[in-house]
Image 1 (cartoon, rainbow, N blue to C red):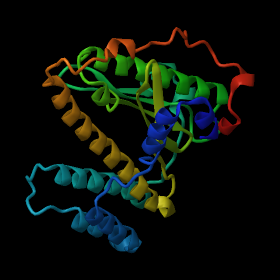
Image 2: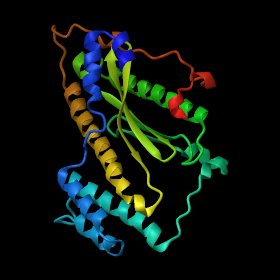
Image 3: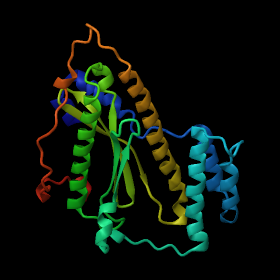
Image 4: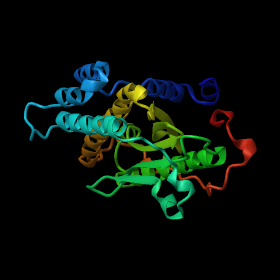
Amino acid sequence: MYLVKQTTEKNLYEEIERTLQTRNKLGLKDFMLKKLGAIFQSDYSEIFSKIIEETATEKDNEATEESRFLFFIRHTLLDFVAMFKYLTPKYEWIEKDVESIKKLNELLVLRLSDACELLMVKVSGPPHKSTRRHTVGDAKKLLMMAVCSLCRVLASNLNCPIKDAKKVRTYSIQAIGNRITLFAISLAAKKKYLAIELASCVVPFSYEAITCYTRIFNFFAIIRNEFIEQEKLQRKIRSFIPSADNTEDLREWLHLSDDNLTPVADNDMDELFL
């Protein structure tokens, strides 16, 4: 942040600082945290029944956001526990041996209303011995694609106020080893974009690490909450009618880099990726 402060205008730096305070925020509601706590404190012999008990809803056919998320928690934990109760888990990185699988380590999430790309998922390596070049190259690719998606979303609403345009976000998820990280990209200033980490969690590979799922579920709760807020913002932007007070032109703020995504040299790689 010191470098950002020294190279950024005061108003923009203060705005970036406020945005950074939203990192790793709590996405789960208190009652869900209590339910997860009760599940993880139960004995191994009774955890199946405890999962079903704590994730039950008053009405089985109730289609609310909370009931759907409880359904997601239930089946995720049941599958994870069953893996250790009835099977001998074995993890292999299939990309290294199967050429046809290599294209399946990406996921693209589109908004149904306009087919805009909202989120891209990229797996950058196995849980053991991931390569630096692959990791950094994927991070660069994700950032560039997120900026392109953001420009496309904003280009559909060029008359919207700048203050609303700066709230529009696109998202990326990168998996490095056993850690997955969610970051958001938004418009920070004229021809400048801000990428910020929203959440990060570790995927467990042993039953003893089952409590890691608290942060995993919080990770997905943050994604859900972000999508809901973005949809509210899109409804506001679509209904906006320009007036004489709207003097700033969004076209002057958008910019696509000329970077051709060339491979990153070893000397340019950040030591944090070691």
